[in-house]
Image (cartoon, helix red, strand yellow):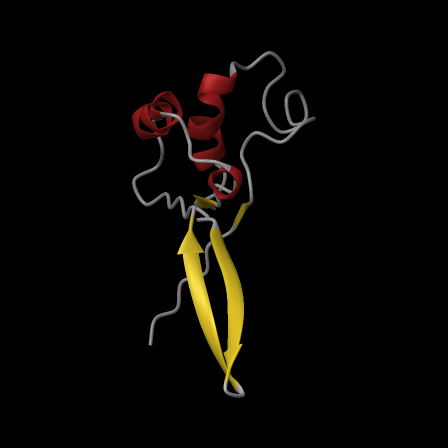
Length: 95
């Protein structure tokens, strides 16, 4: 069995990265392209808190990322349980 391990972070726009990870003065529109040349995945966690704008998704799509770069995105799901007759039913609702 072939196992693939990907290495990345939960964001590519963290505060303090400009001048530390990114070249000082690099434009934020170039962050994802640069990031993908160093890591092969990034978890887009901003989608957990709100749906991305069309412009943001367009910019991600137009970024010049490496061919095998992966971008899993978190999806907000509200989870609750309902107890009925001593059994528990899990309900999932997407916002």
